[in-house]
Length: 315
Image 1: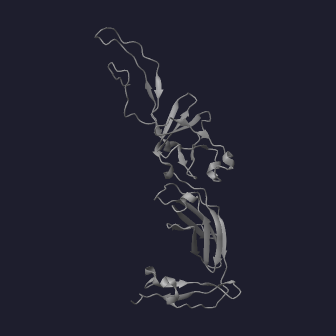
Image 2: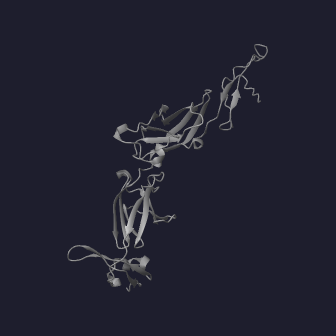
Image 3: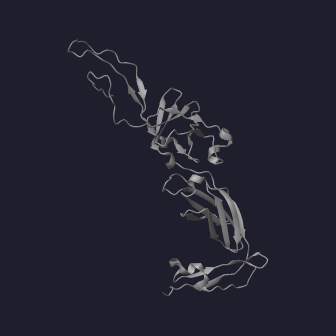
């Protein structure tokens, strides 16, 4: 027990308290021995306080997928179903407001089709910020004994908590051993500020190969092995320049089969007709390439592999 003499003050700040630790506080008073003399009075009723804790302890996650509303989710205490949860948020010069429970049919759309949002062990709520200033969030959990536990999240900006919905793949086309993959950008405002990650593996394999796409593109060509079936998925997150945030969930698993080669015709193209010839990356390198071409019937046909050694262009 620690006794603190606060003199004639009517307010006092207790400092350096440990987060999450229960503290029992009570007060008493006596005359100041200047104008009056006397004895200490009885102690007041005990007040129990718990200093605020980091929101990491309840796995609080706040994100936006449309740059308008903020969705927050955190762990539900399955061992103590009688506890009450409430999330509060505020912005600079505004009062604290309670976050409403998210209605999955709100605005005619579901929260997201992510599996973790179907998890009954999570609390979920959503709110719309009123301006572009920092957002402050706390979660109060009231126990059955009426003890209030507070969890604090570091303030954040809306454009720093972007987590887009899973991508929609628009096209998958196989040309020879190449797969042309094309997808829709997650949101128009984000389209030029995202990076992408593609992972793929052969059928019956367990290890994924991962390709990260840093440039601003909505398509990619993968060089795959012919006569093989692949599983692949794609996800996205902000590239950190204007927007920041988290990876989206992976798309549903997609399968594609690259047919075995049946056309043995050789197609040879002089190096000086290949556009890559003048790119510095390909100088002094031996590369293999495959060509897709159309015949008179305008039908795509598959040419075979050729090889060229690109050399330094002469001035």
